[in-house]
Length: 170
Image (cartoon, rainbow, N blue to C red):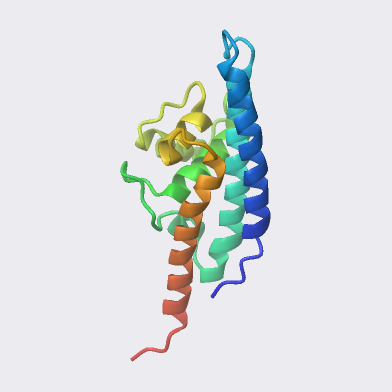
C-alpha cells in the first residue's frame, strides 16, 4: 500500500473549491451577462487552480513507483478521447500556469501541452481549463471533487506497478 499523505489535503482543497464553484454558478444564474461580469473568468481561475492542486498530487505520487513522469502520465484511466485523465489534468495545469508567458517565450514543452489539450478536442483559446474540466467530469455539481475518482484510479495503477517491481521473479 502507499502512504498517501497528499490525498487528504487535496480532498479538502477541492471541496472548498467546489463550494466556491457552486456559489459562482448560483450568481451566474441570476446574472444577465455572466461573461461581461467576469464570472467565466472566475470559473476559469477556479478550474486552473484545481488542476494545479491535482498536478501537485500527481507529482508527489508517481515517484513512489520509481518511474518517469512521462510514463506515469500514460497510465489509466483513459478518457474516451484516448488521452489519460492525468495527462489532461497535467496539461491543463501547465496551460493555466504558463499560458501568459507563451506569447513572449514559446518553448517545446508548451507545444507538448497544446498537443495534449488539442488531442481531446479542446481548442487552446477561450476558457481552456473549464472546457477540460467539463470534458473530464461533466457539468454536474462538485466537479473538482469528482476529479478525485480519476486520481484514485490512477494511483491504483501506480501501486500495482510498484508491487510488480518489488515482487520476486519466478
